[in-house]
Amino acid sequence: MIIDFHTHCFSDSIAKTAIDLMEEKSGLKTIHDGTPEGLKQYMQSHGVDRSVVLPVATKPKHVPVINKWAKETGDDKLVFFGAIHPDDPDFDGTVQYLKSNGFRGVKLHADYQSFYADEPRMMPLYEKLREAGLILVMHTGLDNVYPVPAHCTPYMIRRIMDNVPGLTIVAAHMGGHVLWHDAEELLIGKPLYIDTSYSQYSLSKEDMERLIKRHGADRVLFGTDSPWKQADEEIRMISALNLPADDIDKILYKNALALLKQNGDGEK
Image (tube, rainbow, N blue to C red):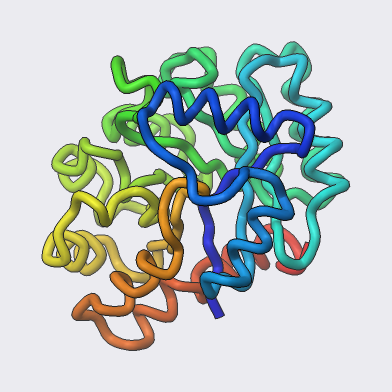
């Protein structure tokens, strides 16, 4: 079984516009059309059984629309996290809606949503997520579309952990895209999850092995950042790491399955 814990797709009505814009700004090419069906077809042909989809609301008014779409679109193949925005005047109500409708967590992307991850105004939102038992997936490090300044660094994640202990955090991109030295100093070995998405193109096999061994394979999640990276190639590289077979299985699906079941029935 393979669970990709870090993917993206868009409603059919906006997928082409969103993909075109991201390709233009990043200079990169996507590997499928960015629709839910395109993601499913890609999963089937590249060996992925289930994907966690991470929507990002770039404006507060988009939050209810995205969450309604996510609720209607999710199934046994696509596990949608919810959208939330720090400027949503009723983020408490949004958190309760997500919890009552079976969402497992939320995705925040500080670069796209124009906030710094450790701002004092963010702490009440993180506390609400903790109270609701929702997972927080946070883009961490530089972003190819809006590379500087980084609005969420490993240092900021550490500040969130210190201020809101007990919040379940997934620091994406091995704890900080491109900022992996800081991630290793500040986050590796700490009580949070990291995912492998959009990291193996740059980190060496030896770097990946060291970071995973230091952090503990129990808290590493496989991710591709689809539609950006090839799943079969990412799976091959994880499988080739010099790690015990059970650790490889934990990364590729066991950890994700356990984390999703802790926050729901694991099947939606």
